[in-house]
Amino acid sequence: MAGRPLLDGAAQDDPLLNDLGTHLRRINSDALTGAFAQRVRQAGQNSPSAVLVCDDLRAPDVAAVT
Image 1 (cartoon, rainbow, N blue to C red):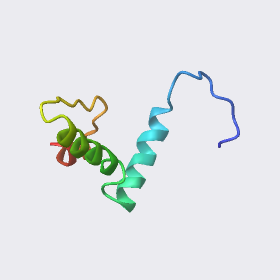
Image 2 (cartoon, rainbow, N blue to C red):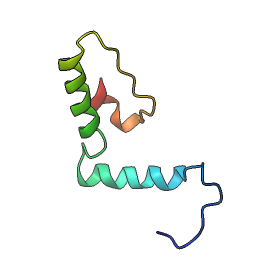
Image 3 (tube, rainbow, N blue to C red):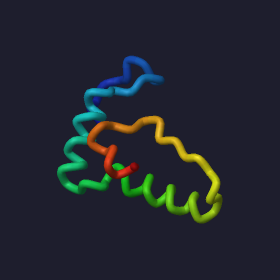
């Protein structure tokens, strides 16, 4: 989208993704956690003894997934 090739196709642009996340949360506070919460509910219904791990939790989203 920026019109430049990726320096490393296996690497993310963390500063860009963090900034986008900040703006998405401003627009809709559950924009990033809503889909995860839905999957947690479904997993709880389908496999009540399952243990779910969110391995990319960011500080602004802690309350939404605890």
